[in-house]
Amino acid sequence: MKGRVMKARMTLGDFLVAYLRKIGVTRVFGIPGDLALRLFFALGRKHRLEIVTFSHEPGVGFAADGYARATGRIGVICVTYGAGGHNMVNPVAGSFSERVPLLIFSGGPGEDERKLGTLIHHQAREIESQHRIYQEVTCASRVLTDPRRAAADLHDVTRAVWAEQRPGYVEIHRDMVDREIEVPDEIIEWDGRLHFHESDARRVEEAARDTAAMFNAASKPVVIAGIEIHRYKASRDLVRLAEKMGAPVLTTVLGKGAFPMDHPLYMGVHVGPISPAPIVKRMDAADFVLNLGCLKTDMNFGNRPPHIIQSKTVWAVDRRVDVKYHSYIEVGVRDFVRALRRTRLRTHRERVQYADNLREAASSNGATVKVSALLGTVNEFLAAHRGYMVVAESGDMLFGGLDVRVPHGGTYLAQGFYASMGFAVPAAIGAQIGNGLRPLVLCGDGGFQMTGAEISHSGKYGANPIVILVNNGGWEIFRPIADRPDLLDLPPWHYARLAEDWGGVGFEAHTIAELTGALEAAHSSKSFAIIDVKVDRRDLSPVTMKYIRAAARRSHMKPRPAPHIAARQLES
Ligand SMILES: Cc1ncc(C[n+]2csc(CCOP(=O)(O)OP(=O)(O)O)c2C)c(N)n1
Ligand SMILES: [Mg+2]
Image 1 (spheres, rainbow, N blue to C red):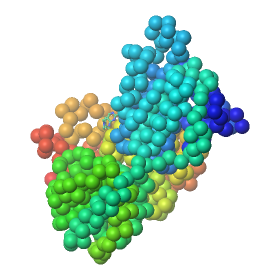
Image 2 (image 1 turned 90 degrees about the vertical axis):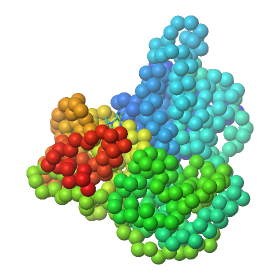
Image 3 (image 1 turned 135 degrees about the horizontal axis):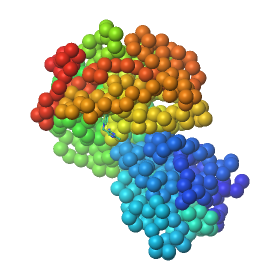
Image 4 (image 1 turned 135 degrees about the vertical axis):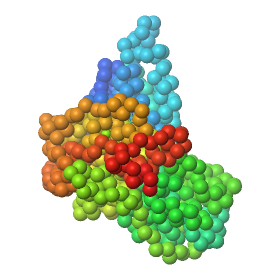
C-alpha cells in the first residue's frame, strides 16, 4: 500500500509514514496548522497512522509523553510552526528533563515564502529561531531541506532519541512533504530495531566486580532505584538482583514504580531527610548504598546533599558507574544490573517493612476531608481494585502521591522532577491509550484549571480516567509561606457539572464516606469521572508539610501554619 513500502525514491511524506511504521509507530499526537497541513495529512491519511488530537498543544505534548512513559515506546508529535511549535516547548522540556523519548515533527514555511524576504505569519525572530529553541530541549534535531539527506537525517534523530531516551526534533517545511527524496539502501534493508548505546563489556564486568565486593563486605546495604531503571527497561532484572541480595529497595521520587510497590523487599520512596521516619533511620544505618539509575537531583535528596558519604556508595547513571572515588564510563545501567546478577553475592535476609507518611498524620474526623485520609482512602480503593494507573499532578499531589501504594497489576506515573502543572490529565489519557490501564488522577484545582478540559477528548479514544480533584480553592502548596495568600486564590469552578457537560460523570465529596461512594460509582462507570473533593484550604499532604518546613529552614522563611491544622505536622 502507498506510503507503507519503502523505496529508493519516494515522496518525503510517504517515506515518513513508511519509516514510522517500520519502527513500530502506530499513532501520532498533534494539532494541524497551515504550515503543517500537508505533513499532518500525509501522516494521518486513511490506513496510515492514527492521529490523536487535543484542544491545546500542551495537552498534545503531555499526552504523547504519558503514552511514551506508559508503553516504553517513542511518542510522536506533529505541530505547526511558530504558535504550535512554541506552545509545545514546555512539555518537551519536561520530557527532556525526565528522559522521555519523543519525536517532534514541526511544519514550516516553504522556500518561496522564505525567499520573499518578508516576515511569515507565526514567525518569532528568524525562520531558524524555532529550531534553535528546540536544540536546547532535544538530544538531536534537524531541518529536512536536502532531498538526498532527508531520510538519513530522520534516521539519525530517531536513533539518538532511542539511545538517549530523550526528545528529538525534525522540522519539515511545507514544500518538502511532496518532494521526492532518496532513501539509502541501508535504511530500506534495516529491520527497524532501535538500540540503546552499547556498553564497554570489560568496564561493565569490572564495575560489577568492584560493586559486588563492596556489597559482600557490607552488613546493612540498601538499593535505591531511579528513573533509568524504567527507561532502560531494567525493572525485571532489578527484581531478580534485589532478591539475590535480600536487601531493602527504595525508589527515588522519579523512580517510583520502577520496583513493584507490593514486593516484600520494597521499603518506599526515598526523599532524603524528608522520607518517612523508618526510611531515614534505615538510611542512616546503611553501610552501603547502591544507586541504580538515580539522577542526582535536589528532589532525590529532599534539597540536601547526599548524607550517605561517597565511600559507602555506588552510583550508576548516565552511562557511568561511580564506585566510591573512581568511575567507569560507557556502562549503561541495564548492562550493569545484569552483570551484577551474574556476580557472586552474599544474600541478606533482612525483614523489610514498607513505610509511608500516612500513619504520622491525624486521621480525618470532622466534616472536611483531610488530605492524609484522602490518600489512605485511595490506597484502600487501589487494594480492592487492581489494575489502576495512578497519575499524580504537580502541586500538593506530587508529594501526596508519594504515599500512594499501587499493587501489582497497576502502575504509577508523575512528572516528579520537572513538575509542570497541567501534566496529569492529558498524560493520563495518552498513557491509557498506550497501555489500556484506567488512570486514577490525583490533581489539584490549579493543575486541573490548566489542562483539565482535555478530558473532554478522552471518550473518542476509549479513555476514561477517574480524576480525584483535590479542591482547596487555590495554589495552596504555597500558602504556608505566602505573604499575600489572597494572590493564591482560584475561581471556584463547578467541576462535577463540567464533567457532565463534557460527557463524563461528576461527583462532589465533602466527607470520606462520600469520597468512597463516589470512587465506587466512578469505578462502575464506563465514562470518565471527576470527583470534586472539598478539602480545607490550609490542609496539605504530610510530605508537602515536611518539604515546606525543610525549604523554609534553608531560606529562613517562616512557614505560616493554620493553627488548627498544620501546627502538629510542622512540629513533628
Ligand atoms: C506550569 C507551571 N506553572 C507554575 C508552577 C508552580 N506551581 C507549583 S505547584 C503550584 C500550585 C498548585 O496548585 P493546585 O494544583 O491547586 O494544587 P494544590 O497545591 O493547591 O493542592 C504552582 C503554581 C508549576 N509547577 N508549573
Ligand atoms: Mg489547589
